[in-house]
Length: 469
Image 1 (cartoon, helix red, strand yellow):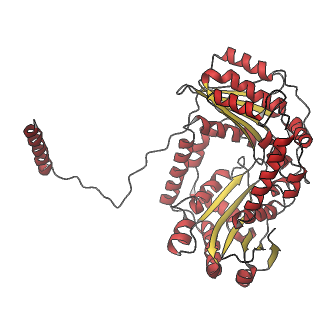
Image 2 (image 1 turned 90 degrees about the vertical axis):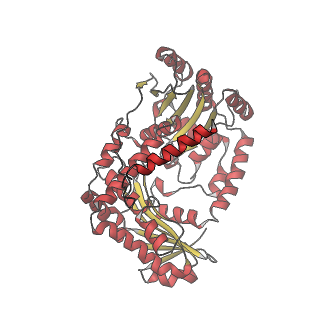
Image 3 (image 1 turned 135 degrees about the horizontal axis):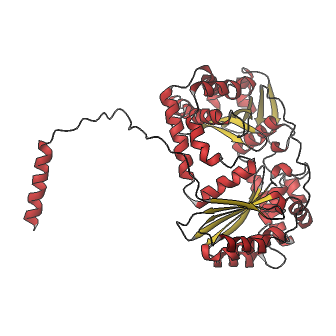
């Protein structure tokens, strides 16, 4: 047997030696096939008489169901004297109801083979859950109880306050957090998007009554959408279960949305003095359009080309070529009513001047000429491919659907996404780069030791110095 195997191996090697070798140009990457458009699984959408939107998405690949209950009730609805209220509501929402303690909620969730939690973003609040498909009715019962009957026990509120104040202290010891906080303030002015975190004083003011008041105002059926994805029961049966759990939930009139008084973008340099810092955190940014604007996809493509990964211009030039920083990237965040674009890096104090010039040059470079065809093609394939990968899981699709509802995007957003990415042309990227990426009207926020980097920044213009809080 061994001799036969050896003879076959020799024979195969001999044939391989006699076969002419195929030439392969290893200097060129293989061609990427066209990225297909995304096709949603079967979707059914309806609304209960009390105004609660219901979205059902069939995905029978696994015996699981992923659930989201999303309402327009994020941090932009926080009172001015209580930044972080929505965040606090979400944090304590699953820690007790009129009939269940936090421990009972946790044990019941575990018994369903699932999960339950809540979170608040800028625009909306979401109760997230998941369970084995056979336990969907029980999961919906838990979610309804949490949404409608959370009682915010004093001991749980006090524990949250203690932990959040400690985490805020840790956050404020990080220069990156200080830069994010100041940039939001500079870009969004007095508008509700200007705060990204609570203050210790605001957290200390929280109590059960205040949290319940916010819940009773915004966590109401006519302000929300229930999204279910997975192996779902027969539709009539499922709609009956949903009506049993959420149908008697009383709708309420909603308050007027907060005013968005957004300041006009302008060039300014703000230095947040952090004595003793051995490096400087640099953020350059300005207001940007929402995802509903026609400029959204060109700007999103331009942002990825500039600083969206290891093949981006900022990464290759500021990190790889110049060696100024370990990290150099850009971001484009589009909320429901406004967005912001930023370029970000962290550099040693001694190279602050050339590093700043390099960052500004990269921003100007995006506006100076159309993107080369090969670079644009690679970026569009990268974006579309990552987008499709992110929708492969129930959780990924659920999060995208929540984002659509939170930002008021059209129902065909996911299915037209890759097509709109592919349609972006070089002249479109250059046009939005001139308007939003070129630093002429951008704010520059730097966190670092003013005594070490202040003089270098003054060479770029007038510098306003503030103290790190």
